[in-house]
Image (cartoon, rainbow, N blue to C red; front, side, top):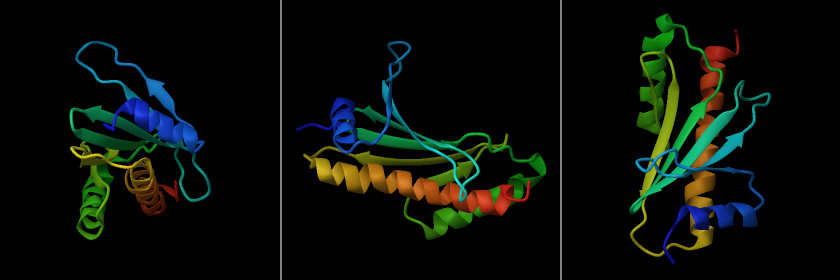
Amino acid sequence: MPVTLERIRYILDANRIEHNWIDADDENEKPSIMLTVHKDGDCKSDIVNIIQIDGNLLTFAGIAQNFELDKTQIPDAIMFCNSWNSTKYMPSVSVTEDGTFFASWCHLIDIDISDDYIKENMIVSFVSNTWSFFCDLSKEFFDNQ
């Protein structure tokens, strides 16, 4: 069975993972699914995870809400992201020149994949590793604010 957003939504529903469907605003955009992991004592911000499918590519993106990095800290943030990327398999992380942190990952889905594999090795692994990155980031840059 092909991997579709509808199938991913079914997997999330079957596992009682809260999510939202986001329709495309125009014909050039793709619909997506949004999962939010809520802040707690380990992480100062909610983490929004977006799932999209474009052809045979399943993409994930993670963004922290309310992390406002002082521009003077951007060089340190780049080093932090580079260190993460050199020691971790997933996700790939970066910081933009305006201080926004971003996590991403993609999977080629050109073969039939089981629902359990999608859940464990794609969705759960991305969301949990992204959470770990933003928790570490929070401790490094935002816990003393």
